[in-house]
Length: 192
Image 1 (cartoon, rainbow, N blue to C red):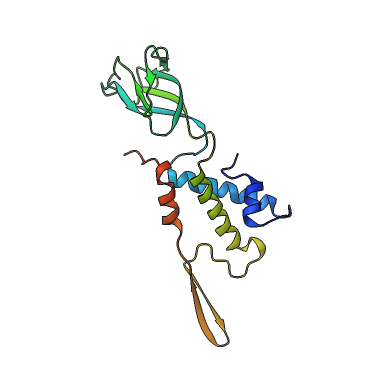
Image 2 (image 1 turned 90 degrees about the vertical axis):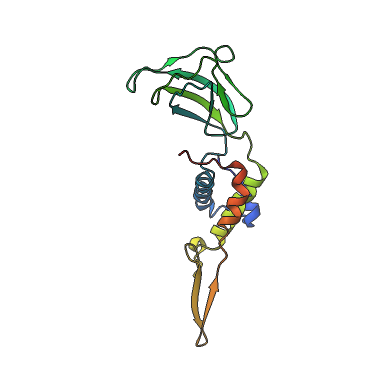
């Protein structure tokens, strides 16, 4: 599933034929990946496994959000050992509203000795993410050589061309900072 469905995207791009549907699907995949890269996480609901060090604390923040379900919490005695459940959700450990695992027994110190398996992301794409996805697709579609556009600008800050013996330069606005700002509420900081 893409962040923007093909019908909405084709309407936004004012495309009525099916001629470019394969290209549009590839474009959607590229934009979905670009947004995931900017946010450092997927937007739509997906499963994740997080392996972390125990440090004696009773709380552990999961690295993605929003976390919608915690499937299991496990421990192992060595880096090559098998995973063993620490108990039952809502009895021995729980998921808090702020994406943390609360484990009252405390996470025993160790290296990569705990594993949380969980689901995170949005069931439906937030409106601001949809807007960024539509704008990205629009810019890429209209400014690439998908339709044989001789003035393709992708990957360029400007294009120079001669017309009537005069050299002219077109400069293009970098919209990446605008999109990053719009996506900031959905972005995860990379782990140190």
